Amino acid sequence: MRFAAIPGILGAVPLLDRPIARAFIRAALVIACAASLPRLCLGRDAGAFFRGDLATEDALARTVAADVTAGVHTAAFSSGSARFDGEWLLVTHQMAALGLGQEILAHPERREALLPAVERCAERLLDADVNAFGQEAWGARGLDDLGSDHGHAYLGYSNLALSMLRLLEPENRFSGVNDRITAALVRRLEAAPHGLINTYPGEAYPADVGAVVGSIGLYDRATGADHHRLLERWATTFRAHYRDQATGLAYQRADAATGKPIGSPRGSGTAILIYFLSFADPSLSRELFESLRASLRASFLGFGGVREYAPGTSGSGDIDSGPVVLGVSVSASGFALAGARRHGDLALFTELYRTVDLFGVPVAHGDGRHFVSGGPIGNAILLAMLTAAKEGP
Amino acid sequence: MKKPWPRKTLIFAAALVAVNLIGAYALDALGLVESLLAPGGLRVLLALPLALVFYAARLLLFFVAPGAVLGALLFHRR
Image (cartoon, rainbow over all chains, first blue to last red; front, side):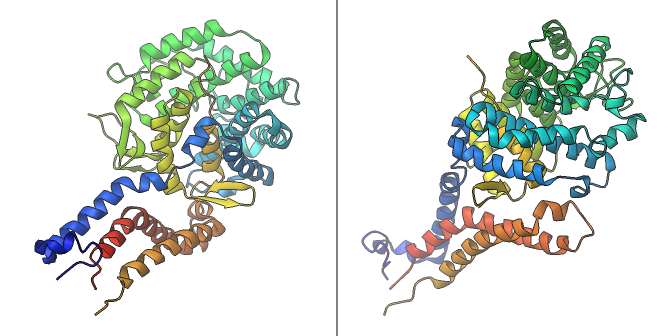
């Protein structure tokens, strides 16, 4: 019997008439194609995002701007915890402001179209409903409690967005509150014996303090203020206390009173710290990125991810990591896009973006484009990560 | 005798393409994330199974279908 498809070759091999041989070849073809074709089909925009192509970035920016302009409220989230819903609402507006701000800085011609959405984010970040979770925890709204010694470290997220707006528009209607929040966070950080301020009573997270530090660094850049001594002292403390000595990864939680880390170093906290610290301390950001790349990078068939736990440690997923599948954290993988872009690792950026493309499912609507599985928060985060500023010379 | 093309495999692959294209926009219209983050709503009853079918089809489309189609065409006999 002959094979019609390649009669001159396979037809001459009678062994291939056997069902088991055909099954083996079919399986080999499936494996060979799986190893080579998906990486070609998916993630084709990675290079355009990495280069900062205006059309590619702007399509996502348009959707994010439309989302925040239309209004995102706590009703959009239902994690089962009012605190987490509130945090997600805050992060949605923070990341939207940062992503849109980065887009304006990279492509000033888009300023007129996108700046109103950044202002809208700033406005929302000061609203009572966005800050209710902090008020619930501390018994006072963070913005009304700036004179106290309460940590309210989550204000670092809002202040990063306000500092970004300040960079885009030095005199804006939120300048005063940006000054006041920055002053309060600086005072609290200077008074912190171990470089940590609490997010909630008795709870301190180095990643949240990273947002505080990033917001001060960006504020300095926007206004010309100078807190470099404080930032340097903090970086020294952070390196000594909150990075795992073996892997260099950041601990997710610590005790602000004693400076002792709690639990394991984690991928999600390290990845977001790389982004936040890029606004204040590029060297520390790069060190963390190199540690993450060395210890947590996962790759399969050209698709990339970031593990939540370093080899030798293990744990489950939580609100910070998102789902952890085969050890890979959804949050850490998404946040790591910023580090890869910031620190010039096109290969990692491309692998991570292929995974985003596969599971995020990008769709186009008119001039806009977004990821189906992102929702307003996921698309805002991805815009911020995919447009993170590259390290300067 | 001329045997027909490996129709089953080709139809299967075409169905995966269709589910991938239509499913993406259907899930988008349903608001996949909003549905999943608002448990108790009726939309989740539709969105969750649709999402499972969609992602299964998407994985099959990119990781299994190309090799399966190639193998079927290779062993297509006359």
